Length: 320
Length: 115
Image 1 (cartoon, each protein chain N blue to C red):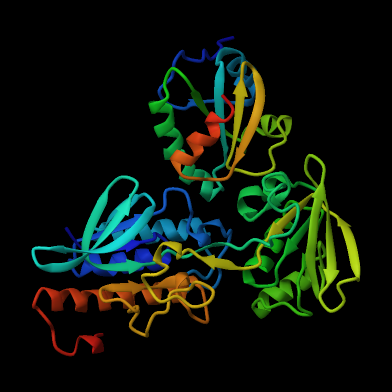
Image 2 (cartoon, rainbow over the protein chains, first blue to last red):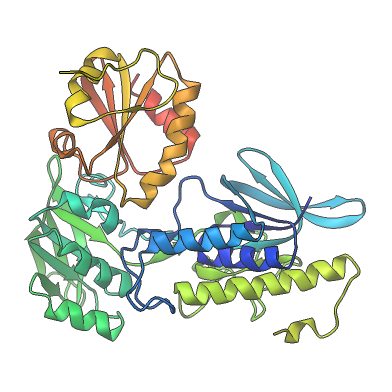
């Protein structure tokens, strides 16, 4: 029996685990055996405080994990298939089922994050692994001197487009608006990079090729008949993230896009379940906000567990 | 000149290099090569899964690992453009690719479709 089980091993979950462990709550963090934390595939983060020279996504999450484990957080790699209420010795608890077994806890903290969004256009799945990619740090090195296309206009799309210029001959950013959504400094760097070109107000209609990608057909968002086919050796897609919350459908309130609806204290529509990080409905998805959420969720979970154990501490919600 | 001898019936993934590829393809009737690189986060996640599968399938499937960073020839020989990428060989010939990380049971199913 655990005090708390944390579902998801990215920045939010690991920060929650750090806080619950330091609060001496018996904590288990379950992180997916095959879906990586999104940030671990980013080559460089320069907006996480404390790292003036920037830090790699993978290295940062490794540091989070080392820190949390130092205070006793138990972790395991597995995938959660379901969660349900159960009763143990008259107390309502949460039961989580994974591939390797069933685990019980008084409280759950969900930090399951997001997965790559797809374009859902012809050629996309056919050419995945043969020219279509969602991970620049994984696959960029295979495109030396290639002509690449990056789809998207946010921070990730622009950061990764800049990263790809280390290998590629050219990188064309295809974005459906007339200006980038990305943070100003990234937009500036992309604009100044000689290898980067732009197709504005454009969306991808089709990805084509033979044994590998050869071209991308784009259309103008304002005039779909205005079509253009660009030769490309690779297409990197960074159009957004979809929440990994399928198993919570019907249990927790989700918004129309599938993000978990959480209050300011990270509580959800269900008692004893808290949510934090990219999987919740929020306006800014960054490592720094995920960490803030994680600490908040841990604090709320602790208050809840104290209540269950009959050890309520007055004024818990004004803790510092 | 000393030559690396590939072991019979491994229960762990065999470390391969560009130079050992032909030998491995000839020696092992059903071979799955995990192509990975140190910069690739999803590749690291697949690592433990490959170790498990190697142990569980000793005698019927040989698993191997190749760091494509230090072994570029194999990557271009077999048209690898994305990692993690498992190359599947049957009786010395490449019969398929499995691209991307996935759960162990799904991966095992995919490998079996090539047997």
